[in-house]
Each structure stands twice: as C-alpha cells, then as structure tokens.
Image (cartoon, rainbow, N blue to C red; front, side, top):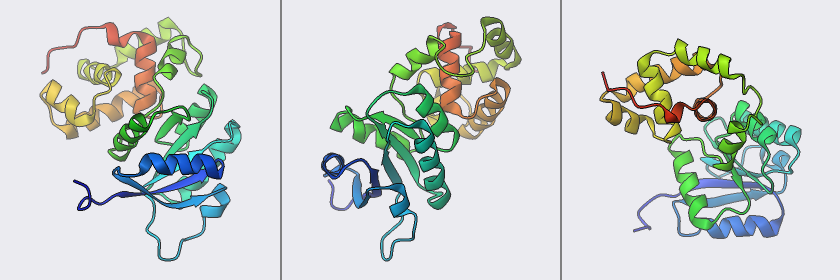
Length: 228
C-alpha cells in the first residue's frame, strides 16, 4: 500500500530536537510526513520557499496556558487551512479549553502511543476534534469552566428539539456527521443544521464542548429517540 498514497504534510513545532525526532519516527510509514521542524512558533510564521503548506501542525506546548493559546492563535492566523494539534506533557483542562477557543483541533498527551497518535491525526484530518478521554471525567466532576448547575442543564436540554437531543446523544458516542446521519435516517446536511442550532442553544463554542457538556449533564444515559 503506500507509495501511491499521498502523505499529509506535517509541521513539528516546539519541544526539543530529541522529542521531535520521536514524533517524526512515529509518523514514518503512516499517512503523514514531517516536512519541517521548528524550535519556536515564531520560526515558522514566514512563508517557506518551495515547501507545501502543512495540513497538520503538531505543537509541543510549554505547559503555560497563555503561551499555548497565543501560539495556536498565531498558527491559525498564518495557516488557516491547517489543523493545529497540541501535545502536552501534563493534562491541563485550562490549556485545552483556551486552545479550543482559538481554533485547536486536538489535544494529546506526550505519553501517547504510536498507534493512538496516528489514529488521532487521522480523525483530526477528517474534521474531528480529539482530546484525552480523561478530560471528559474532568468535565463530569465540574472542573471545567461553564459547568453550570443541574437546573441550568435541565433548562438548556428542554430548549433542544427532540432531533437536536438525538444529535447531542450521538456526540457523546463520538459519531461523525455521516455516522449520525445513518443512525438517525437523515442527511449529513441536516445533521449540520441541527448541530449548529444545538451548539448555539447550549452556549458552547464547538461540537467537542457540546459533547463534554452532554456527558456531564448525563445526556448519554437517556434513550435515543426514534428517528423521525
């Protein structure tokens, strides 16, 4: 398989040379390939002569939320079509939330295995947002901002239409839009419309935050509605 399949170009930014070499090793013989490495975000903000633009940028964080947020913001501004993936040495709910708000598509821990990394990058390249499952636990404990109260949760849930509640439950299962469409017997375009509406009604920024909200609110425990 392999040689006829094009590989998605990847930038590796931040961390030290040894760690980046390890990440590059993980990408070998996968659907991704490293085309450039940079010590700092500032080093990759100028156009690269003769090099394709990255489809994915893996940024190794410093662990300082403000720095990570600023880095993602700058990378998104320069490489609008690229998906930004953070690799952190420690789990930080604050860092994840801040970086998702400015456009990050993934948040992974440095202890991730090769197979898990490649699987995560594949999902991210397809438009999904990926983060450690333990962050869902943090949301359930109410450690993430915007957790709200049980009364507020119930009120927001009541404001959703039955179909929006179906979509929300599908989010807790990690389904893609196409999978939701098949499960509910509707089109992917209709899923997008419902998704946009429920995100607005819940007061969250994206589907990942909606899924985490649903998990904390116990939406995954309710029975799926019959498809209309």
